[in-house]
Length: 137
Image (cartoon, rainbow, N blue to C red; front, side, top):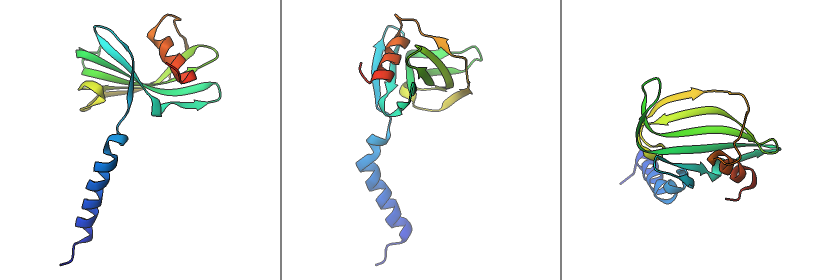
């Protein structure tokens, strides 16, 4: 009995997914939690370039939220860039997801190349910047 190439490829893909499926998913590291949300960063998304670090951060809300445009969401993934020595940040992408932990459908994506903004020294954003620039929590 001959097995078709399609069936063989399907079996290989199922096997690979079983072996590596969990590794392909984001590994979010919790940075801060309060009554409204938990803030995470993704270690594997930290990309250092000289004095700058590109990061992925997630805001995981404990209840459904609605933005000004009326999109209902429960988590947000923000792609940002930190200027480590100057303590500044700028955001370049925001994605809203309809489920917690950046799951479900993307309900809105904004590509923004915002201006550099100073980071408040006693903020969660400062904690995220410190971790992104040093790798230490």
